[in-house]
Image 1 (tube, helix red, strand yellow):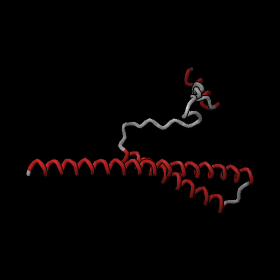
Image 2 (cartoon, rainbow, N blue to C red):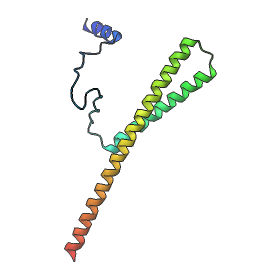
Image 3 (cartoon, one colour):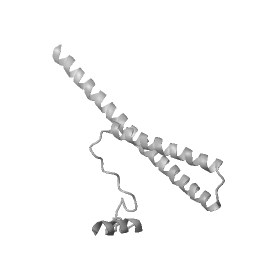
Image 4 (cartoon, rainbow, N blue to C red):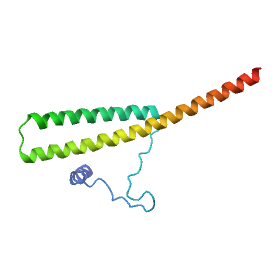
Length: 126
């Protein structure tokens, strides 16, 4: 019985209780996704896969828009989907650039620590 009720809620779009609006510097912004104990490299790989899939879907949609004769309503719906995919791809690209920058910083920190340890080892053995 409960399954039927939950399915009806999902069809109507009621996925859960309304979210509270926060005040302050983060008001109006979407919260960052909580990392699931993934390394930056793993996050980059996952995001690159999502971006690749999004670009592939965008290309397929462009082909449909060019080749098929569609009603104005169907064309409008496909163009709306194209805009959604384009904005999603640009969002993924921004996040990917941010993760790559973070990965570069982590790599430079690792190299600096390694050189510091190497310098300490060289000083200690002389």
